[in-house]
Amino acid sequence: MELKRLLFYVILLFINLIIKVELRQAATDNVVLKSIKGQDGDVIDCVDIYHQPAFDHPLLRDHTIKMVPSYYPEGANDNFDPIIQIWQSKGECPEGTIPIRRTKHGAISIKKKSRNIIRLYFEGSAVSSDAVDEPRHEYAVTQSSTGNYYGAMSTISVWQPYVEGSGEFSLSQIWVAGGSGSNTNTIEVGWIVCPLLYGDNLTRLFIYWTSDNYQNTGCFDLQCSGFVQIDSSMAIGGAITTTNHPEIILLVWKDEDQDVWWLQYNGTVLGYWPTAIFTVLNDTSTLVEWGGEIINSNTNGIHTATDMGSGSFAQAGLGRASYFRNLLVVNDNNTLIPPPTDTFSWASNPTCYNITAGENGDWGNYFYYGGPGRNPNCP
Ligand SMILES: *[C@@H]1O[C@H](CO)[C@@H](O)[C@H](O)[C@H]1NC(C)=O
Ligand SMILES: *[C@@H]1O[C@H](CO)[C@@H](O)[C@H](O)[C@H]1NC(C)=O
Ligand SMILES: *[C@@H]1O[C@H](CO)[C@@H](O)[C@H](O)[C@H]1NC(C)=O
Ligand SMILES: *[C@@H]1O[C@H](CO)[C@@H](O)[C@H](O)[C@H]1NC(C)=O
Ligand SMILES: *[C@@H]1O[C@H](CO)[C@@H](O)[C@H](O)[C@H]1NC(C)=O
Picture 1 (cartoon, rainbow, N blue to C red):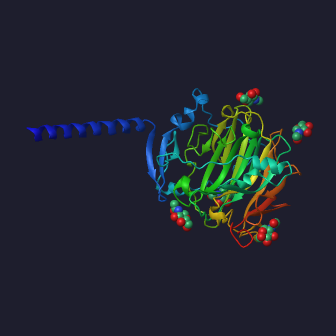
Picture 2 (cartoon, protein in one colour):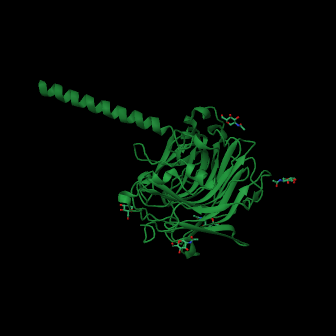
Picture 3 (cartoon, rainbow, N blue to C red):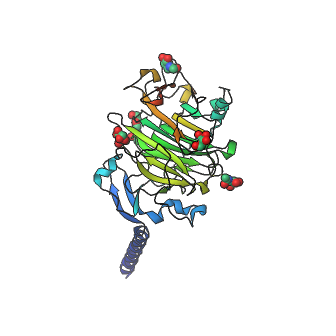
């Protein structure tokens, strides 16, 4: 009798469990039309474009999705080879869906950093209170901050830098920013190696944004609501191979008719940030930067050996050092032009990572940047 009852309860429990699993499956089936497991270990969910994370944002609940830019900046080009991501060899997402890289459960605490350091440099002081913070963010960048910018563009070489600490990253990106202090707004796009965020050391295409100086808004990739993706071929945060150090061509521009900032990757329009999520970039950008950033977790007072760029210093030059070329900004007349002549380059810790800028006919405004981190002059 007792055994029978026990058996009955066990069976009941099982049925209950099955129903629960089925229900959960049904809920995600509504929005996930297909899942693809890439050979790099990534799982890509093809999510109904109208049910993407962006629409959870309180200001985007009634947002009407934009499927094409109403205009491009003068001088823009989309005649580039589409980027191949590693997972794409295992399948593609159907039309009407967007590929979203599945993240492991649990919040990732890696944050970008308040950019006050930049402002201090801009104001002519090389000493920053950030120097005593740990972990410390270090930069080698070119910056332009003497105009109103409606976008930026560059061709960037792609590498796979060594990242030493699990809480560190090494990235190379364009910043399109505005505002100051706690009102700093940024749009950031480029490539990154970040073991904590992605669970491996592969090079990935990423995006980032904040509208309150990295405090309560914004995130990497599609980890929070804000960026609206329209492209069904590429996953934000997806890995690419870096053999032969390919270039990627990034363009961000403001579409004043649609009130959005568009993002184009090698000729593919990925999607946009609605200006509604910003408090300053709903207007224009006043600071554009191009370059590298790393985290130095600096344990026991020893500098990290995390690479920036290729891991070679700037003067190693073509084939050895990483570079940005054809630096351009979008001006008041919606035209891509070289940045103003008072644009300048700086490195926060030049014995560890440095930068050299130049200009020529083929490459326009360019720079080499990077370094190995820890070395005899950067102990
Ligand atoms: C981006 O386009 C350029 C120009 O067509 C091409 O050389 C490059 O390989 C492309 N990048 C990637 C990662 O495929
Ligand atoms: C990344 O590379 C480091 C150094 O080679 C290694 O110790 C670490 O295990 C790698 N991390 C992952 C997640 O593969
Ligand atoms: C941008 O947003 C802020 C804060 O919501 C607002 O005060 C400002 O007027 C807006 N500017 C433009 C140009 O819409
Ligand atoms: C924009 O175009 C107008 C008319 O062609 C010209 O007068 C003006 O100088 C241009 N402004 C900029 C910032 O290039
Ligand atoms: C970059 O650092 C290396 C190694 O310290 C040095 O040889 C080179 O002159 C530096 N270049 C610049 C532009 O600072």
